[in-house]
Amino acid sequence: MKKVIALAALGASAVAAGAVSYPEDARHVADAAERTAQKLWAGVEANPAPVVLALGTFLLTLVYHKLKGKTLRESVEVAATRVTVVPVPPATSASPVVARAVARATRAQLIADQIALENRNRKLPAEVKQAEKDACYTEQAVADARKALEARERAHAEAAAKLAALESEWEASESELAAIAAELAKLANVVQ
Image 1 (cartoon, rainbow, N blue to C red):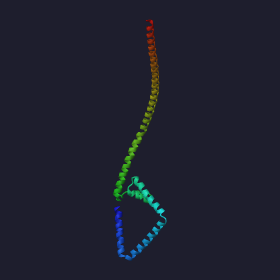
Image 2: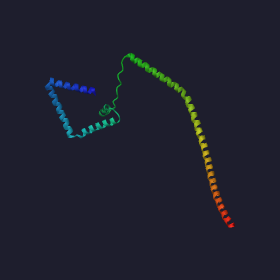
Image 3: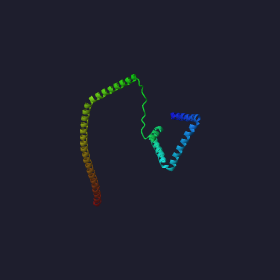
Image 4: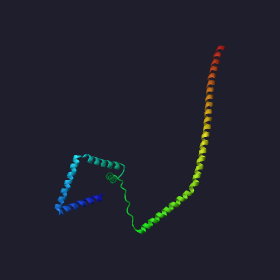
């Protein structure tokens, strides 16, 4: 942003210096610019819809990308260019010594990564086989647990049914004993 402001100030000062040094040429350029601006404005006044649509779309795109979390600069770039601006990495030193050092470091890292992956790949078949066995054993254990659970659920259902039957029988015998006691009490009254 500072560069743009500096360039604008430099351009304005160059135009002012040119206008002072060459007043007739500057007036000729200013007249041409004024005629072009008047033609443009007349076109906008005749049909303002495309300009309003373009500005509205630009502002809407700018706001959309700003809400998505992009900086104002990135939002303006996207809205103005309709392409993704890829940041250019800083230029590295073109020194052959640095290039060789980077190449050696890259090669060393790639070899280390390759060795680590090869070692891991050597161990993987045995680990896969063990994991398959574990999966089979745990699947069998789950099946056995389901069978045991079903057996226990059946035993629980039988015990609950037996409890309900015994409680029902107990209530019936209690009520029968109460009825017998009431009848005995009536008979005792009659006998006296």
